[in-house]
Image (tube, rainbow, N blue to C red; front, top):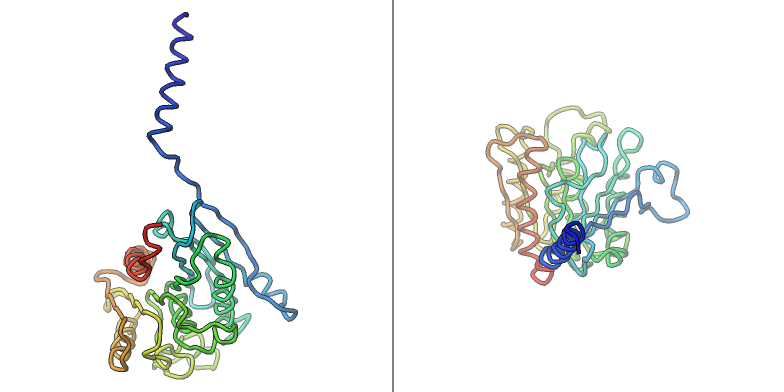
Length: 279
């Protein structure tokens, strides 16, 4: 046997040996632009905006699920998978929703509820656990996650109880009525409103576990920490047993705050998903 053949066989044996020692990195399954709006009345705008993407570990089986809602003041933004959530053993559902001024309240709340309902009905096909579905989002996404998670009406339309959620984790979300909702009514003041479109109005001891995260009260959106703190205190007063709040010192209202908050969300999900945390 000449040297060249010996060298080739040696490389082949080394490659096989390494393949046994080093497990292959499983590529995630990604499916995009799934229309979640249902029914004969779905219009063209819903066809365009009521879509979601699913990110699932290749070998996922009964793992926790996080529905992620983008920010943008309910007037901009687009679905995405935050990098901090990828390769963490969870299924991610990133959903779009209709935006102001093309629609007004409560259309975007209805959209998020429909996306959550789609997730409950379909997520097992992607290896997700329908008994451990969490909802989160940044800024406007945080507001919408709180509205759908706390006000039982929106999921009730789809035959789902809000208490079926594994938990709600708004990041820097408004807990009073959103400023875009107020602007739709002609109110451009900075005075807080607490009507039926304020998450805090729907505080209840029967709510799912609640994780509230904001940035530094001096750097986040003005008043954002204080209204989250008010909700947290209210939940405690009325007897809710599982509300946690964090103020991320030094962080303003931006993507850096989101990146700092997401490890806390993952840790909290694991604490509330004991049977799915190691899958």
